[in-house]
Amino acid sequence: MVLAAGCPAALYVYDSGTWKYAPVTARPHHADGRTEYQVTLQTSRARGTGRRAY
Image (cartoon, rainbow, N blue to C red; front, side):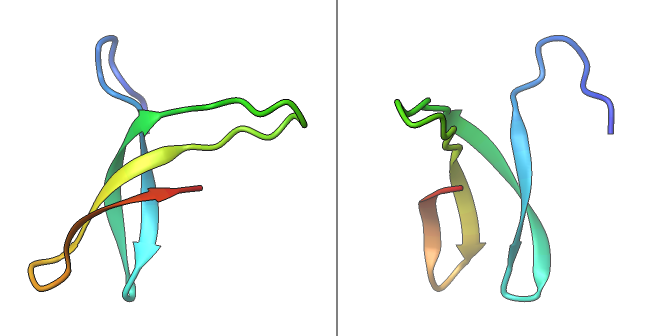
């Protein structure tokens, strides 16, 4: 996949048996060298929208 200039960063996240598009809302860098990607994920209508970190 190629992103055009101005497109938001995003990940595809495997949730409940399907791959879902998840826009990245933050990307903190930790002192120990880890990088964390925080995303907003629409899991299902019943569970709603959630935030997760990868």
